[in-house]
Amino acid sequence: MDNKKIERISKALSDVSRIAILQEFKKKKDCLYCAEVNDLLDLTQPSVSHHLKLLVDAELLLPEKEGRNLKYVLNQQVLDEYIASLNELKD
Image (cartoon, rainbow, N blue to C red; front, side):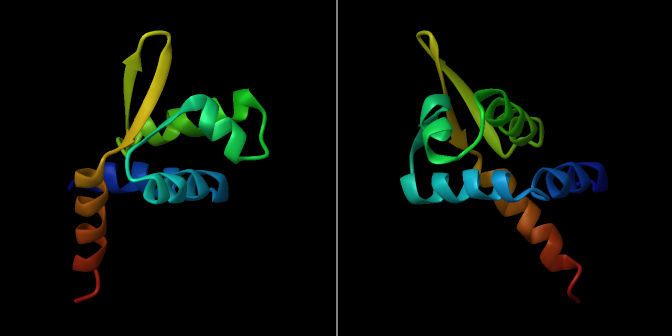
């Protein structure tokens, strides 16, 4: 993973709301709809959309259109690569 991608993911993870969103994905083990994320967090809909966009831009979430709704799936591969990149810094 290149340094730019590590930086983008690190910035995406630098907010408590975005971490809370990822924790909900871990609990659900499937997907979440935008409306579900709105219900889980005490934030306005525009704020939730902003947080989701940053997570998508960092490739941590994959958006999927389902009719009129948008659902998001955790991109476990990118998360694993990010963690592996950080682990390389330990040596």
